[in-house]
Image (cartoon, rainbow over all chains, first blue to last red):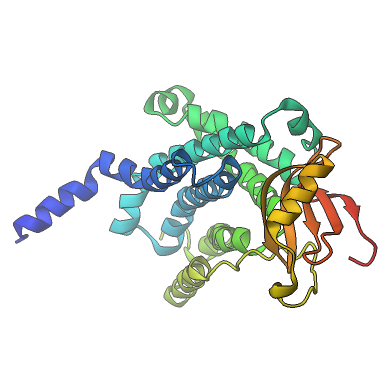
Length: 202
Length: 104
């Protein structure tokens, strides 16, 4: 028997819009800071980029987690919301790009640094994100059939580009590795360990 | 399997929760003594502006003053200055070194 409060809590937690609102919270705080003049465009780059990468990693670790731990209700709950995580990662990346353009302010400066390793990797990752975001809807899943999954696998090269972008723009390994080591470990576990541990037909 | 899963989850959690180190990017380090002997960041901004720089932001990094801005030549850069002498030590563009004073 569930109490009334538990039922209400469950309804709120399972509401799609509540999850979207949750994903929007960091953006709201960042944009409020920018609007008040407290933060300049340059300082918007780090938080928008970090949240984009974080949400991308979050979306990416769900399948490996299921492979390693087996189907769990909490994982299933998150898997159902993976599209929201991916699309939110894209929206944060778009914000990241917009603030980059605002900060740079002119095409000459953007072109001057374009071929720096930390810069072109960011552009390339953004380019890969576009088709991923555009096909994050039921209609695309239906139309593309098996191709949809291959297309969405572009997230792996995109993630590598994001990692390089982050390391070289920041001159600092720590924060990037904090996000990417768990991802790499889980992806590796999924591909190298899980098949050996689950015999065929089990 | 369970032991392995727990290890993975534990490692992931530890990595995710580990505090990210505070940014000392380590590009340049200045051993400039106590801050009481330093010139102010305003003074540096004033000096640079006079020389034709546009300063967007400045802060302390690795015991130096780190400035984000545009050089008199029009390059968008990140530059380091000695906090006592205000001497230019390093100029870089997204990690690409444009200038580095010998010895730094």
